[in-house]
Length: 212
Image (cartoon, rainbow, N blue to C red; front, top):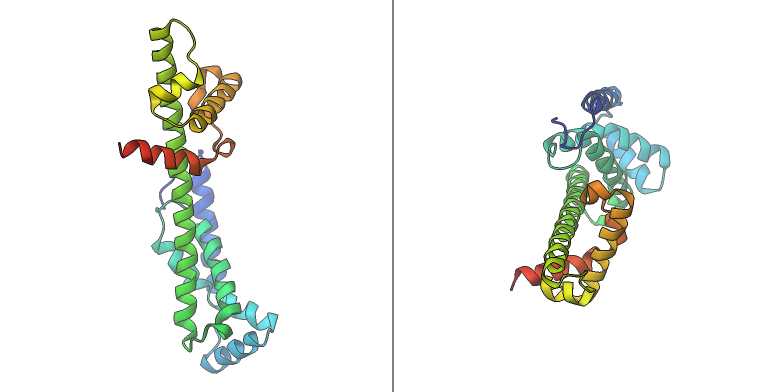
């Protein structure tokens, strides 16, 4: 699997080792025959934790295969494996109440859904961060332009009008930029904190502005 853009030196090797370890663990797992597999499913349905653990271990190769298919989409293979394993355990627990008869089909479906949701969540976080950084760039450019035009520091109201943003969005982005300047004046945009702002509000405003 390729390294991500922000990957530190040495991380690629660590990821490869994790994948090798996961592959080895999946290969060592006991694979029950059809009769034993059915007994484990029935026991797991009664709440037998040992049976659930045995089913989980027996199907780790499924999880690894699903993670491999989704590699290079935003999460590492080992992270996808972890997400898929959670989905596997939930599927084993929920199968008796699912009304489904095909255990393998149900488990594969749930593992895939869990991984796909994790990928969507990761992509949303990346997109939100990108929008926030762009908003900060726009704010700084508007601030500089307005200062030149007015011969003084613009008010938040004046910046909001120039940017065609809501007052709330202007104030929130302005506060983030101000905080970033205090921390790292020479590298403002590299240190913006996504958690410091209501991203839903900012993104809604951004989408509204783009539609003008």
